[in-house]
Length: 247
Image (cartoon, rainbow, N blue to C red; front, side, top):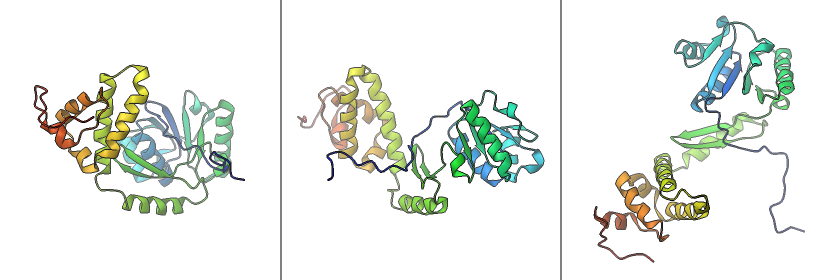
């Protein structure tokens, strides 16, 4: 009999937006897979160190090192490389060495991803679509990375062209709103009001919303009303309003 609440499926992963800004990430290896991992964590503003003989770096990783985007430890991995590290990404073609890295990470409780070895991963890298602040990840929980890439491309192809810009403008408005109503008990009202803005305004309107529009729009927060963009722009700089007030 089906219950009143969502059924538990099991076997999945807890998909999170992991904030690694300023965290220390160690990448073991310097080949193609390592290059992809490096891009992922650099995009998240992590502090990245690569441990690998320079002779084993591919062109992209060499470029990252030369541009000082990452630090290089020019030798093979040693256990002391884990000192002070917050995350480890291992991408070497040596199963025995990879397992050693994984075991050391488990002993030190450092989250680790061992490329192409799902049982030795505390987390997986999915296929990600990025459009400004918008990120969409598709994960197959280690079952089919290529299939995840295909699904991600299909999703991206059906997204509105301006969705990333709309998200960016909403983010600016949300930060302004928190300054207008910073109290913790305002949280539910802030969320409801922002939700209504996103539901009632089109993506084009959200993209077109200027900083001046936002300042006027915030004046509608206290009464909890949602004006149209046209109604927002009918307001004069001194606060006069030429259109009908919403209830």
